[in-house]
Every structure is written in C-alpha cells, then in structure tokens.
Amino acid sequence: MTVARLKSVGLHGAAILLALWVIVPIYFIALAAFSTQDAVYEYPKNLLPTELSTSTMSFFLHADGIVPSLVRSVEVAALTLVLRSRSGCRRGTRSCASRSAASTRSGSRSSRRARSRS
Image: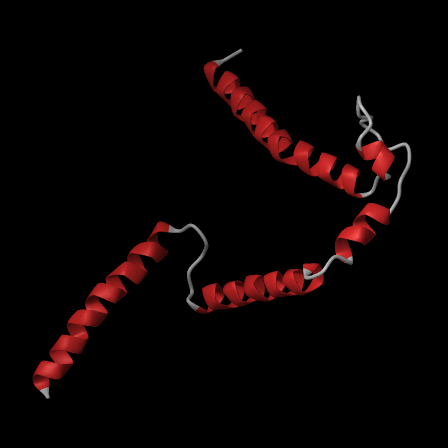
C-alpha cells in the first residue's frame, strides 16, 4: 500500500468515525422519542425498535411552549439565512470576515472624511 493510499484510507476512516459520532446519539434520541415509556427504561437497550409509540413524542409536543419555541427557532434560522445571503457572504469564508472588518474600518474613516469636508 502506498503512502497516498494509506493517507486516503485514514482520512476516510476518520470521516466515518466523525459521522458515527454524530449519527449514533441522534438515532438513540429518535428511538427513545418513538418508544413506549417502558422500552425507554429497559436495559440493555435494543438497537432495533420492538415497540413503536407516539405517546412520548405527543407528550413532548403538547407541553407548554414547545410549538411556539419551534416556530420562533425556524423564523430566526430563516431570517439569518436571508440576511447572510443578502450580505453576499458564504458561510465560513475568510474573505467575507476580512471584507466586513475592512468595511467597518473604512466606513468609520470615510464618515470622518465626509464630516471634515463639509
């Protein structure tokens, strides 16, 4: 096996490990949300659901403040997406951060220049 091939296998293995690190807890949370209360407290847990129920999820959704909070979160996410796309910046780009910092600095200078000219 060549060095490049070994690096590639290591990179893919690390990516799979990180994906599992995120996916496995989400799977167990979803499993608990759609299981009966008795199945949630069973030990050892089954990896595949034996009994499915929406009672736990229904109880959660009907608790006070859950649905309005969910709606508010979606509104904030949408507003953030709109504002970010309007600014012309892509997420995580270095040029965007430096551009906004530079415009802030130059904006304060240009406003001083405009005041001094008038």
